[in-house]
Length: 255
Ligand code: ADP
Ligand code: MG
Image (tube, rainbow, N blue to C red):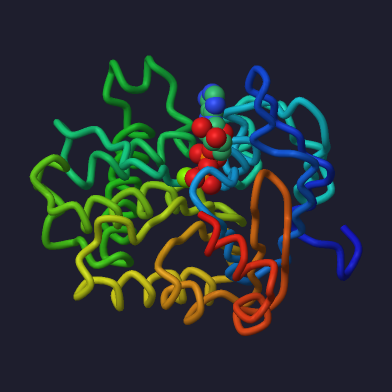
């Protein structure tokens, strides 16, 4: 990878659902080590773009490069292992499992033990399981959830479920984290904690693509913002630049 090349480079992304072009030639470059906001009115294609970047959808046209490698259309698990982790607009946790178990699911890719190691409870497996447990607890501490490590995920208040999803995504050890409306349903009093966690993630050198409706959250943490409408980019710049862009104002007034 040459210096100055973006971490993620998407060009001409089209996503067609029947007669609808949810993405209509979208370009998106995400630099290393920044929080990049993706905003736009409802239905403008933000979640669809996240689904393309994470491999849920293969785009109808266009290319995605990550660390210079073409990844569009690859399986979601291959993209996750390449270093792109995500959360979902609607929380997707294992409700019957505890917080720490949910994070362990995110860590399973690091396991090298074979099924026989597990069956015979070998030393290799016991060491690996203990280390994974410590790693999972550390991730819960990172997002401020260590006090509920043994709680069922379904018993957590909604805002804390969103943090648990972030911890599980971080378990992949990603270079890029995609967050789809992490503040949705989070009580206003809990928003500063969420913002602080996203800042800490950036401090660790992980890039974040943040879809967010709360404009104060977007403006307070995004280094760069891309504004979408009808499946393409209508503006890009820092928060202050896009906020005063007439095309952006018109798109939001029209929605
Ligand atoms: P946003 O996240 O910006 O609100 P979405 O990406 O969810 O927007 O949706 C963009 C458009 O694509 C909407 O018109 C939506 O109804 C449509 N869409 C999204 N996913 C699908 C799908 N799986 N099948 C058909 N239409 C879809
Ligand atoms: Mg969405």
